[in-house]
Amino acid sequence: MSLMAGSFENINKKTIIVMKKIILFLFLATSLTVTFAQKANVRKARDKALNEDKPDFAGAREAIKLALKDSTTKDLAETWYVAGLIGNKQSEIEYKKAILNQKFDTLSKGKAMMESYDYFMQTIKLDMVPDAKGKVKPKFAKDIKNIFKEYYQIQPNLIGYGAFQYAKENYIEALRAFEAFLAIPKNPIMNNEIKMDSTYDMITFYTGVAASNAKMHEKAVNYFQSLKSKKYQPTSVYQNLANEYLSAKDSSNYVATIKEAIDKLPNQPWFLQNLINFYIHSNKIQDAIGYLNTAIEREPGFAQYHFVKGQLYLTLENFEDASKAINKAIELEPANADMYAELGRSYYNKAVKLSLEANKLKDTNAYKKEEAKIDEVFKLAIPFYKKAIDLKPKEVEFMLPLKQLYYRLQMDSEYAIIAKQIKDLQK
Image (cartoon, helix red, strand yellow):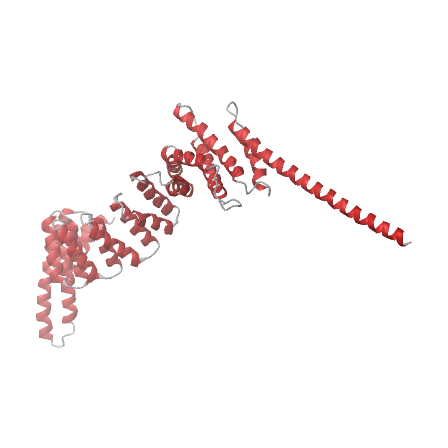
């Protein structure tokens, strides 16, 4: 009995060992079959895409899609490289049509190129992974570098596609193409072989504009900021950068950018004007006047600066300086009706303020004397309103204060005439 039991035990152990070997063999065989099948899909994709007589891009993409998902091939640089070749070949064919003046599909070409670019970027990552000995032996970097050079240097490629999408107001896709263009020279596989010249700066600018239009304001700011030290269209760069901060309601950086531009670009009035407007709308009148004085120093013959300065003094009820500034504006621009009307308003407002002060007097005789003086100030406004109406005969806005002046000063005939004019114009 003991011999038989031992025999059975030995037989069972041998059976288990044999079964394990069979299972291991079947597992390895299955794995090799799957791996072989997926590698076959990679070859199939390459063959279909690169067929010179009749490339089958749909079939190639279907084949590579399986290999990109399978665990045995999805981490291989070759799989991603072949995926990139598909779009690259399709883009290349459309480009050849363009060279031969044949009908070609800009959208298909661009989409294929961007697909190719994305796949090649992943290829580079996998191609640079060290081997078991810790050494990096890239197989595809050289080919990708040459393809990327063409994407960068041939204008109908990334620049052309980005411009096409920008014109279609597809700013996100335009941004994607432009950013790929900007990234290529900085890619380590390029070995600093591409010089980032004025074209690079130009595309940086339009990448910022595309980002702005896509409401990606932080990106836009970064691109415009990167151009501040360059020579590419500094006025436009600073204007766009300032506007980005304004859109983001970042008044601190907006003001800082404008002030920096005022110093760097003293011959560009846009920055002073916008800073003045900012201070006006922020009710920082003294700051606005200060920068208006700077603007006047730079352009003393620009009437509008003097005019706005006069208006600001009016808001401060500094009637004397207001009159001086507006008179200077009229001297420089004598046919401007608005300036005459504003000068009339300065005297009118001055008289109103004096009248309010006079109303505080308790002595009747003193009050009457003051009112007589005030009427003389009101009278000073009349010729300026009349001049404004002469220059703009249909401007009711100039007539209404003149009508009030005639009423207060009991100039009945003049009042009747202007009242009729206003009524006729308001019919």
